[in-house]
Amino acid sequence: MLKLIVLAVFVYLNDASYARVEQITLTESFANYPGYSVHFPSSPPFADAQSAYWSLQQSILKPGCRFTPHGVQDVQLAINHLILTNTSFAIASGGHSSNTGASNINAGVTVDLSRLDEVTIADEGNAVWLGPGARWSDVYAKLEESGLAVSGGRVGHVGVGGYVLGGGFSWFANELAWTCDQVLEYEIVTPARQILKVSATENEDLFWALKGSLGAFGVVTRIKMPTARIATVFGGALTYRQENVVEVFAALQALTMKAREDLHSQAYISFGWVQRCKRHVTSAYLMNTAGDRSSAALAKLTSIPHVASSLRNTTLGESAREITDSNPLGFRRTKFTLTASSTVEATQIVHDAYLRTSASTRFGLDDMLGVTIQPLTLPHLRKGRNIFSLRGEKSPLLLLSAEFWWSDRAYDQMYEEAARALHDAWVTELQAKGLLHSWLYPNYAASWQRPFKEPSIPRGAQEALKSVRRKHDPDDIWRQLVPGIWHV
Image 1 (tube, rainbow, N blue to C red):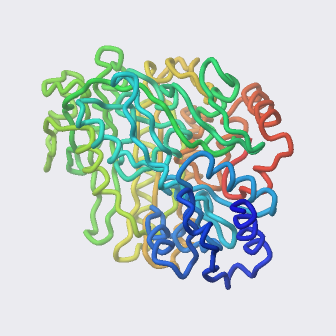
Image 2 (cartoon, rainbow, N blue to C red):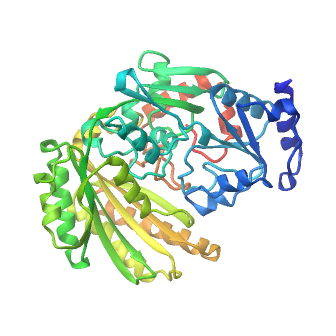
Image 3 (cartoon, rainbow, N blue to C red):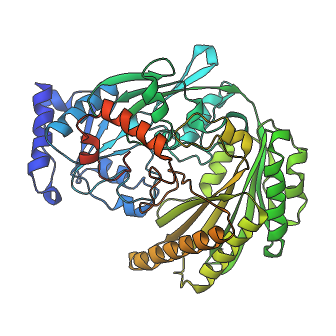
């Protein structure tokens, strides 16, 4: 009976005019079924979920309904009926992508994984099971009760699912590589509607393919990761004067080149134009995961004159909340990424192009342009076992990202064009100096970038990914029904 009722819901959605979908009166047996919550546009839970996206462009998409499973069998049943009714859908874990349609959809169904938010300590404290809908702030809070930590997100309101499946750049990267490289086991519903356990000894081909491919192979419903016993870390933000940026760039380069000498120390730098203040802001966020306040590796960054500091002994959870506060919801956004060789010259090229763009753009009152530069050190790159094909790098790299934030949709085209222009300037100028790298980080890539195509992913890795796709999605269903993501 339940299956027939669920099928009826999706048949209705498939045949109806989605713009006019209203609350369906469900039979008592379906309404009381504990596994499912189906929310329609007229319901408060629908509105609450829509407002939780990081990018406003995602929030204003209107699915016919939001379908919220509570377990893997629920996901399997949902995927089965979406396929049977040929209904397009999106999958949302944390909803932190700036790409419109990546985790929400117009007219179809959004499978909302927010209730798959478990944080379950396992193996006598040596591992943890995470749901894809958990947010890193909640993960850290739970683990810190037991003096534990995990290689997770730097921003607290980011969801576990997309972050891990897209690679995941944590404060433990020098020690442990990408977060995806730490995964012990996945539970997944494939496009063939199978529930699979995936690990280094079971479905090994899929275990590799899930590490960096985002949602290209199905719906991951659980992720098992190792824990570490860490009480406190040392970290925080330093804000610098604009005249000191060259010193900051040199200090970051020195830290990057000496990563092997102190695997616990990391930093990234950000600079941005804040229209409301009409000024540039330059900062660095520093971290020592061993809690060492006197880390020699961070000394060059701390010795540069600065106007503000939040450096202190703290926890990963508190650090993630601090970074979250500087990364609010409610803005329209566009974002892109590139990768460059790690040199001061590359950083200066990126900064100079940013200055030209910020000077030539007519910002709205509350609008911003921000650039972040994160070192990819050799210890980080060479430990990786994922789809990125970066293990053979001879020198460290810089992960670049740029974001525009704005409020008025009338500026959408202007900011999209400005982002493209900044991207093109970086490509041209870095390429001219032999400093541009071909790899694109999926978690930061714009919808118009192609992180799973050559040259970002070499041909051999692409063919291996296609082989895994043919095995687990022989009818190429995912490409047909999940339009908002990249496919392999």
